[in-house]
Image (tube, rainbow, N blue to C red; front, side, top):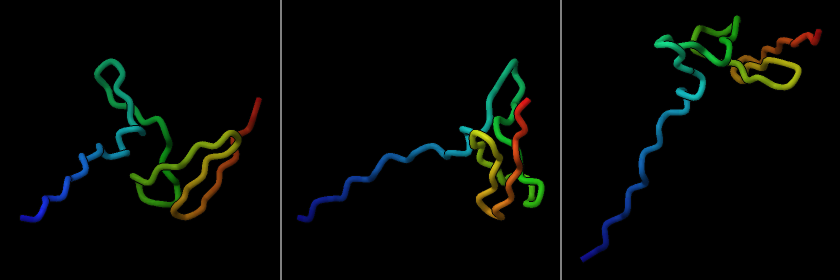
Length: 63
């Protein structure tokens, strides 16, 4: 009889890392891209926000 393949455990979706629950309300940690539709998050870098889908870049001004 052939051996059965072991299934890998399912990982939770990574979308949950962009949200946080505070005082019973859901807040976003990252911002949406203004050019793409809502739901496309931008990556935060030390001095910029970057969209990986449309390559939009927003500079973060330091005070």
